[in-house]
Each structure stands twice: as C-alpha cells, then as structure tokens.
Length: 558
Image (cartoon, rainbow, N blue to C red; front, top):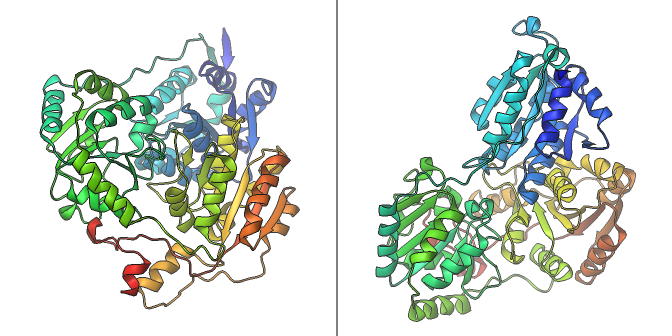
C-alpha cells in the first residue's frame, strides 16, 4: 500500500506496540501530529509543558514498564530541549526513541528557521541516531531504532525526519517487530569455569548489584545465586529493587552515601562479585583503594565496561539473567556463617540513624514506605532527598525506583513520574523532590492536572540547594554561595494555580495523613514538607577518599 511519511511513522509506532507518546508540536513536525490526531484512539499523546518533560516522561515510562518510551519534538529548539532527557537516558541505559522533525532537505545546511543538526548534537549521548532524507528508508529506520534501543545494553536512539519526507509517498509493507534476543554470544564456558572456581575458594564473598540486574529482570536468578553463594549483598543506586531490600543478607547501598556496613564489608571481603554495575566514581571512591583485599568478578552485558574503571580478575560478558541461569545450574551451596556473623555485627554497630525529634527527610521517606507498604513506584529528582529515598525506602522489586543516577539530572522526577503512571496506572507513583529540583520542572504539574495523571509530588523543602549546601558546610568553610532559596514562592498555591491539590506539612504527625489523603484523591497532589536547611545526608565519603573512610555525624563530633 502507498502511504505518506507521516502515516508510515504512525504505522511503525503501532507495529511496535506503542500506546503512549509524549511530546510538543511545532511547524516541522505538523504532518506527523496531524496523522497522530487521526489515531488518537490508538496512541495517546501527552502534551507536556516543555520538551524536556516529554523526554523525561518517555524515560520514566520505559523504566517502569521495561518497554521503549517514545517522545516527539519539532526542529530547532524543540529538538534541543530533548537533549538533557536523552543524555539522562543514555547514562542510565534506558530504551527511548526520540522522534524529531527537521526542515526540508533543500533547506538543510542553510541556517534555515528552526534548523539544527540534532543528529550531530546528540551523537555523543545516543546509542545511535539517524537523519531520514528519503521516505523509502523511513520504515526500516524506525524499526531499526526500536531494535537498537532494546538490544544488548539498552539506550536512547534519535530519529530525525525532514519535513518533506513526512509528506512524501512510498510503498509500505507492515512487519512484525524485530525479535530482541538476550545477549549470550560472548558467554564463554572457560569464563564461567573461572568464576565458579573463584567462588568456591572464597571465604568472604560480597555481591554488588547494579542497574544491569534491574534491566535484565534477573531478580529471581539473583536471589537464587546469592543464597547459594551465601554472601551479603549491596547495591548501587541504579540496582535498587533487583535484590529484596528486606532480605537478611541485604546490607544497604554502597558508595559516597552508602551504609558503613556495605562500604566496610566490601573493603574487607576477599571476593567482590559485581553484577551489572559499571563501577561509577560515586560507588568506588578512590579506585586505587576500592575492594583492596578482594579479587573482583565482573558480570556485565557490555564488553566496554570490563576493566574500564576497576580491574576484573575474572569476568563474564552477557545478559545478566542468562549468565546467572548458567551459574545457578552449576554452583555449589556454600556456607559462610562466620563471615555473615561479622557482617551482622557491623549492621548492629552501624545502623542508619537520623534526628527523630524533628520533621526530616528520612522521616518523610520512612512514612512514605509505611503508608504505601513498600508497593509504590518511587521516582526522585537529584540531591539529598534522592539519597534519603535510596537509604530509607526498602525496594523489593525491580523497576520501582526511577532516578537519574549517571547524569544526576535535577528536574527529572515529575516528568518521569507522569511517564511511569501512564505505563503502570495500577501503581501509586510518588516523586520525591527537593525544592530546588521542583522549581526546574514544576510546570509539569499543569500537565498532570490537564490529563488528571494522579502522581504525588513530595517536596522535601529546606529552602536551600541542600546537597550543594552540605558540601559548602563540610568542605567550603560555610560559604553559602548561591544556594539559599529563601523567597516568596508558595508551592501549595503554585499547585492549586495549576489545577492540582496542594498540601503543606510542617509537623511529623501531618506526614502520614497528607500521604493517605493524596493517595485517596486520585488527582495530582503536591505535598510541601518543610524541613530544616541544615539537615544532612549521612553516612558520607569525601570526594577522592576510599569508601572505607566513610563517616557520619558522630564521627564529625569526634
């Protein structure tokens, strides 16, 4: 059948099972939006307040569902407004397809109105990108984009389509989506043998779980593996939920704001089994001193990660779920009672703690956990509140903490929360934000209200840029340069003005009732929680220090 380019775009989206897209129209992409209008009963379009919100929403949809998230933008500033969201998805390996339109082929390279080389701009922050100048290549390009976004280590793909291609006509033949197989081609039997031998000879193993285990949906295989190895477990920020945070073997997060148990345990272990993590600087601290007593096993789908940041004594390259399946069929049941008893002593000696006499970020997060019974999807922005959400909410399933780990994008959360709620409407979705982050994306409250997307925005409001202020307090002589946000902005009134519900919380006893009300309303709600400006995130490791040099408020007093 003969179709124009815009019809082909929509047909290909339907082929891929896309039910929701997020975006913002403009001149160059009008043909596609006109066709989208005709299929609004099949593909729902969410008009965000800003293109960055659309890219974050597509990201949140993808993280919550495991499917590909899709966002649309027009040429020039519309396309460039997607860039931060695309980079966020790239750093955290999120499958997103961003479709942009550009000026017609004859106008390319002429500094035409709203022309930008968005393929060139996004080349370093996409897994792959395309510019389509020939309508006969359009369908195959979109299909390739969806395949590339999902295969191996996932990531964002950009497809830029010139406006004349969206109007040109060509023959179209429907196809089923290309099958995406789990990556097993690099799994070598000798590598598996070496890993098993090292596990068999270990007396103090520790398991470090990263985001790859979440992406691979390897929770069951991971639990079986950990129980057989009989080892304590820590996770990265991106690995939250892959291993049950309530399990007795779980020791909390590792790294700059990890628990003392995890940081000291990894330092003392003789074998670190790293599963789907990339050894970020926030995890390792000083890499020369990281896991200094241990041999390191690294299991990852991406060959580029092996020996990139930390030397691996043994490794297996492949999909985490498939690798663990193979290991589990051969691994022996081990007993490390003595080692686990020592780790348990560390847990007793170094629990997480905070001031229980005041309304604090950790208290709010614990109340969110209690009210939701640990069954919500938690989204965060970036800063102190993000770390408190990682420390004090116990994640028991994958795809339940959505956060910008690699890029650290302030303003990520509200858009991502809307995307998550669209993808999994049956779940309570709560975005935990700081007041600095909320200012960056609070225009999306209007989007949530327009479509009645019942997300709950919990603002941990300390009237400062909390994490930066914490560094200024500890390392910059209390010189609070440009981090104080004391002004007349009223978040409750802002929420109400945009059509949402606003609730202010100033006392501990008000937190649970506010959350319960927000959940019951079935509307977008902003809860403004006022906390002290000098509350800090502990434990902490200073930049460049070894993770064993982790300290808390008691250490500071000493």
